[in-house]
Every structure is written in structure tokens, then in C-alpha cells.
Length: 587
Image (cartoon, rainbow, N blue to C red; front, side, top):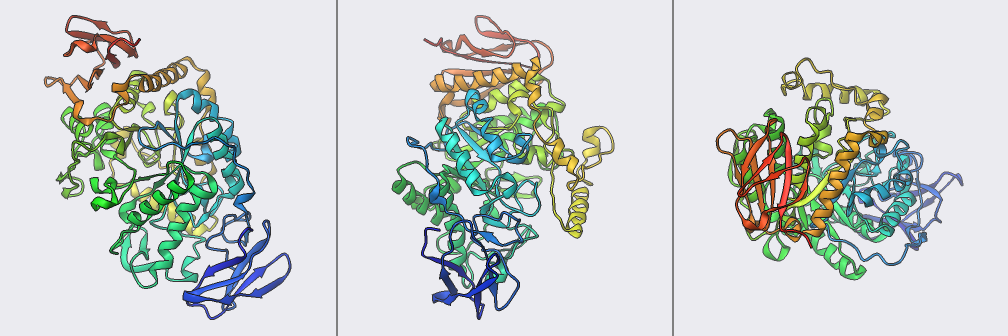
């Protein structure tokens, strides 16, 4: 370890001892100010734990390494021992082509080191920022990662902390930035020992997971610092370029300065110190532009935020689904609103929520502040059977989704396998060792989908996959052999071409929402044209050929098409389920 002291915050303890299991001894720790305890640091590779008032040994809340699991002793890790390759200048999250992946199912081996072997695929695709689903240590070997309990540790089944450093370095060497998904709004149900150490949680507020993290109550200062320090260390010690903050609406904070605003300011300071861009992307259900407003203007200062309404508007239009939170979506009018105004519910009534929701996004606010997608882990994995759009859509419809997302005014994200129309599902899976918890998860998952009308959607009774079954996890792994099939290879090449077009055509890459508009068929809703300044994305939603009217003499050249398009004087004729991008001829 590089520090001279090993410290832990335990304000309610009368005594704290450092437990060294390999040596069969304990060392009494010295009490300091404000509930902090300290002892001489241990060397890297040493297993250690803490005993509070004679309690059984507990892992370090700030442990970077839990090689034997979240209930076992911690192992000291020195992040400075890694030698970073020179030359990485960083990458802002805004406007970058993101690629979300889950380490455990991205490759057959399910490790960070094996994922390095697929980085070239991402480079050839044109990805600019790899977004890792959470890697914080959680109970069991496989899971989505949103039930992490060792927030400072890297899950051992993925390779541990050194493997994350190797992955980030390999990505940087190939020109890819790395975004890490972090969860600060709750901890998982087993292996969470924070409450033993201090008032990390408070009944002042509640969340869907129970008591909220103590961000604004008595003794909240060290709790806030615990989260802030966690975020900043991913940047400083692991070379991470961006953090995706999970469900920030569940970070309830009535302090004068919201913890996210404080994080934004400290991230900006660290960015200046490190000399490279550092980004914060927030998942928010609030539909509030203040999330990405600078802190100086009263906002939370996030670099970007997820904008799920774009997904909902596109998905419902193409699939025809209207259940659950999709109830207000599904028309071309709604798609128009999503693509031009960002939020469908931007101060309007939400039928699903039964309340007026959100606030409008100022037109001058650039589209790159909003991250959108046609698929992500939630929108696929939280379906009853974890099925992807490829289960029911034609390849042409998948191409339409990709074109709208990648040629639109927002920051685009691709979900692993989407680029080739992967047929493998992404299901919800867990590996809790406690049988009582495993049973509760099975029961809860089945009940969750019991009243959502999935039997109607799927055309019959639905059997929700057992989250605890190994087969559910294995079924969710990508099948890379699909790339050998012509249809999958063709869609992959289309995605590659889309991203090249985004790089080469300024109108397609622009986030200027003032020149973004939608024209569409008001008769039978069979087509629409997404106007992007001097470029246009023309879509035939129908299964039959359509003649689509055009406007603008500067868009009379085919830049990219799924199926061949016939250009007329002021029309374009497209086969069924087709998309073409028009613009000025490229030089």
C-alpha cells in the first residue's frame, strides 16, 4: 500500500481492531477525530479485516479487492503499481458512440481479460466509448451488478482490480474511452456491512430498495465523502473516462448543495488536475433539463443524461407494443416530440404515472447532452423473457432503429450484440448463495410480470426464466458465431457504415436541435423523414413499397441505404421496411 495508515470510519464503535488472518493476530487501531480509526498500513497482497467492539471480522468498506467474496477478508491492493501506457488524451462522453456491455456475458469466459480480445471488434465497428455495466463486488459469481455491496472493489469473477486496469489500458491503446456504471442509490441485500460501521443509511427518506443513503442527515458528511471518493478514484486510479450514475432520482438529498452537484464540481477539478476530460452521465427518471445544467446555473452539472423517451417512442412505433409505461407512446406525433424536444413528458400529463411530469428542454440545449438508444440492459433485460427486438423485427426494421439513433441529434448508444441483430436474449440473472434470498428473487420476479400483460404480447402464457438458474445466465451470453451468418454480417456492416457516416458528415454528427425536424405521413403513418439540416433519414415503416415526398435540393444524393432507393425529382421510392440517408454528395 502507498498510504502510511489504514483507516476506517466507525463513529459508534468503542474499539476497532485490525484483523490479520494469515498472521493469526489482531492490532488495536487508534481512535482519531470524528469517528475515524487508524493503524499502520499493510503491504499489497495482505488479507485483512476489521473487528468492531469484538465483533466477527468484517471486510473493509473501501476495499478494492475481495478475492474470496464479499463476506471474506479484504486484500490490500496498490493501484499505483500499474504502469499506464502513455499518450491517452481522453474523450468527452458527449457525442461519442457508446457501446454498453456486461462483462460476464460479453464473452464465453466472462472476464475483463477475455473482453480485451474483443476490443478490436469495437474499434472496427466505430465505437468511441465502451460502457461497462457495474463491476463493483456483489454476492455470488454472476449477476447484473446493480446489487453491488463492495463499492470500491472490482468483482473477483471478472478478474479483480488489476484486470480492470488492464482492460482500460487496452481500450485506451486502441483509442477507446471507458465509461463505468456505478450504483450509489442503494446496496445489495447480502454482504452489505456498511450499517455495522456507521449511519450510512437513514429513514429520513425511502427508496424502492428501503432506507435511503444518508446524504443529508446527522453524520452524513463522511457518507457523502464515501461516495464522492469512490467516484473520483475510478478516474484517478483506474483511468476511467466517464461514470454512468444509476437512478439518480433515488439519491434523495435536501442539503444546500446536492451531492451530485458537489461531485460535478470535484470531477471538474480532477479533470483539470489530470489533464483529460472526465464525464458524468446520469440515469434519471425525472425528465428534467436541470440535470445537465451547470452548477453555476443551479443545475446538477451532469455532462449528459439518459433520455429513455426516445427509446420508448421508437420502440413502440416499430413493434406496436403499448403495455405498461409505453401507454403514451407509439405514434409518429410522439416520435416527432421525442426526436425534437427530447422528453415526451416535458411538463405534460403522464398516463402511466398519473401526474404531470418533467419540464421542457430549451431548444438551444445541444442534443449531445442526452444519451439515447434502441436497446439497453434495462429495455431488453427487464422484459419477461429478456428478448431483444430481433425476436420479432425484420432486419430492415432493425436497420431503421439503428439509423434513427446513430443519425439523430443525440449521443447514441449500442447494446452489445445489437450491431449484428443478436438473437440471444439478455435475461435477468442472479447467483445469491442464500436460499431464502434466491427464493425471494424468484418469487418477486414472477410476481412483477404477472400483471403486465406479457401473455398477450407473447401470444400465450409466459414462463419467466428462473433468475438463479445457471442456464439463465448462460443463455444471456453473446453467440459470436452468429457473425458467420450472412444476415448478421450484413447488419453489422450497415452499423459500421452508419458510424462512418456519422464521422464524415457534419450534419449527421451535429447536435443542433434547431435544424432537426420530422415530417411524416399523416394518412396511414407508413413513413417519416428525420431532417438533419443538410441531411435526411428517410424511413418506410410499411412492409410494402412506398413513394415518399422530399423537400430540399441539398438532399438529392444517397449516402447510405439498407435496400436500394429510387430517387425521383421530389420523391424517393423505398422497398418495405427500408431506410435511406440522403445528403449532399461527399467529396
